[in-house]
Length: 112
Image (tube, rainbow, N blue to C red; front, side, top):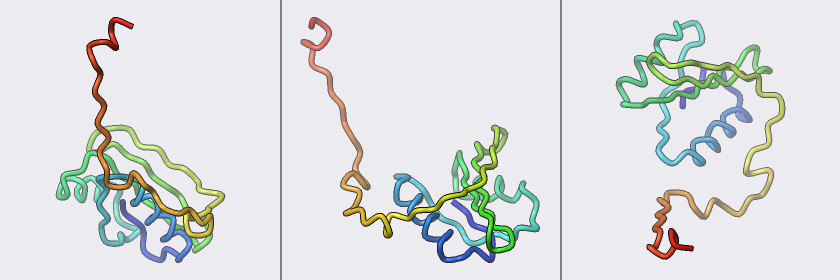
């Protein structure tokens, strides 16, 4: 998860909320928006990541979210219009955060 320089506090809180929801996410330092998009592939390669989220802000008003499968996969760019952070929605917390669900099927499952 990477953000561009000049990101405002509201966008930054959204990025941190997304990081909390993704179990194995890692944040990286802010990136210059003038850099080539290939820099994201290099950052992912150094961190050992397969996917990337890049939050790009323009004129401190518009937020674009790039979702990419690195290094050769497809990418998509979304305009984020409505932002509601977990803090303002007053969620009590993510009870499954950091847990790894484990599912076991009994032999009786197949017979029934």
